[in-house]
Amino acid sequence: MRFPAMIGALAGLALAAGRFAPGAAAAPPAAADLVRPALYAESATVAPGRTLWLDVHLAIAPGWHVYWRNPGDSGLPTTLRWTLPPGFAAGDIAWPVPERFVLGSIANYGYAGGADLLVPIAVPAGLDGAAPAHLAAALDYLACAEICIPSSATLATDLPVGDGAPDPRQAARFAAARRLVPEPAPFAARFSVADDALRLDLPETALAGIDRPDLVFFPDRDDVIDHSAAQRVERHGDRIALVLAKSSSPAAAVPAELDGVLAVRGADGLVRGYVIAAPPAAPPAQDAAPASAAWWQALLFAFVGGMILNLMPCVFPILSLKLLSFAGAEPARRHHHGIAYAAGVLASFVGLGGTLVALRAGGAAIGWGFQLQSPPVVGLLAYLMLAMGLSLSGVAEFGAGLVGVGG
Image (cartoon, rainbow, N blue to C red; front, side, top):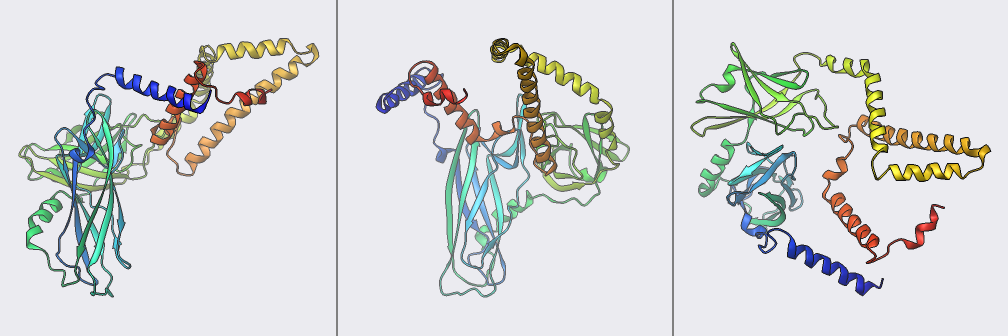
């Protein structure tokens, strides 16, 4: 098929998809209408050798939200890439206490209505005061409601060199933003491991002064708890246990330390955030015993799964073709073909499993299907399916010259 005709076919498919897709008549909202970012400086000047605080303020449209550093089951964290004068250095974002958004079996962590991301900027001691300091940041975020729209913006400010005194006009803004930044927990926390849950153990004093408190724990890692499961509070005397369902993902792991943010919200709207770094109350040795004791069950389930897979319509016909090729071979060499085929299957899966185990042993939190969480991979697969559909339908032919390579 010639290139212009292929382009025409693709354009026709795109128009047809847009014409018949539900709700296609309504264009998606513009990203600029969903999140309006702005950059504010706590001081009107920069002082050599001192720290300047900046506030990246996000005004978020009703019904939409952006994401925390751990977005939860889906989404992308909001990021900042700074362009600063020589000698300046940007610190980490001081994230405010996030919210939890649950839709069916998916839960996300982020911000609705608005968010203030505070960032410290270290100013060099030998700063030349001849010209204003140009501070710029590239902001990338994902705004989501029923659909998600990625967007970016560039924020910048120019500040002259001075004494770095706080700007009275920004005092209320930065004071309100700092009240929502979690503080190190003034109490000791521990966690323990149950069969299907983690128990975060807290003292009663963690809730002091809050009317009818509601507790939510936001983990730093995304492979520790089931984000969509309800978090249950249990009271035992002067102690409180927040029960967190374990993650069921292939990459799930029991952490050496349970790190995250504990949000305590009162009925009057008061919010307190505590940075939690809870060591285990007891070594989670019980998790290793069932896995080693039930190895035969794992082999049995793997065998049953393999049998089910072989009966699938995308596999069973291929097996019959392979058996026919064995039948057509010389009788004296049929068993050689069978042994080579079985060895190839086993070697392939041992290689795949060994690669996965090696990556996870090296600290990579991955499992089967993890690549489908990557937007570039999903996009490439979508185009691959489109190309295969065009090829099978006779609209276009791809790779016709490679058909004989396998032979």
